[in-house]
Image 1 (tube, rainbow over the protein chains, first blue to last red):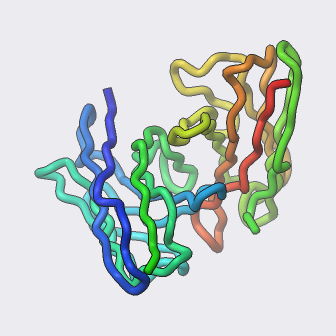
Image 2 (cartoon, each protein chain N blue to C red; image 1 turned 135 degrees about the horizontal axis):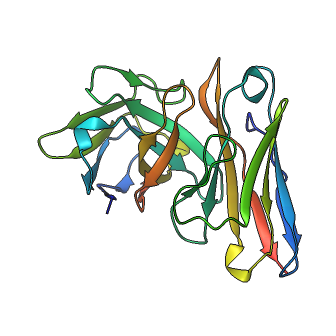
Image 3 (cartoon, rainbow over the protein chains, first blue to last red; image 1 turned 90 degrees about the vertical axis):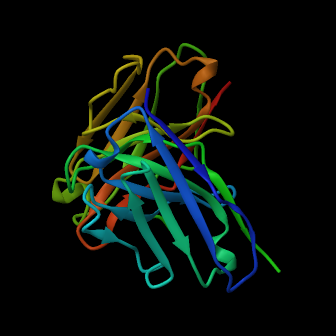
Length: 121
Length: 110
């Protein structure tokens, strides 16, 4: 059974940093591209970052580019999101998700339960 | 403002059929990119409901169906049940923006 378990969320000050982790199990982690998707309280879904199966390619939208870094450790079956220079608008539940399908018609076939990031002084 | 437009809410009585629209443009749905749908039950993570416009993952009831035409897509739910009450999101790819989501539609079962 595919499982994705996020951790690392919590309270951070504006301008601060947090590192999120996503532990994967139930599938061959190194075979799959992975991504982070966030959801602000009461809002919709926003694509935050993606990394290819071999880690050689990453993607960030303009809203987080230069502040967030996605990485993976296939030896630990773990996905990471290093978040820096946090802003109030980064406050959200962050989900890690496995990519299904093929680019550009890919989708997210499994999701973690999410971890809440709160940005406040 | 989301790139893909969904109605904020829809409702229906048990047993009825409801549809949720997802309207895009020539740079996403209209460009031929696939549309996918997710169901988010209250307090839980999104779950893949429809992929590749009209395909159901294993375990998704055939009461759920998807279609696409031109710059729009639709999710149809037949035989509405109380457990279908949730938020529904569409997702596609945009040639300028990468992955894009709809703003979400809250389905209320009356």
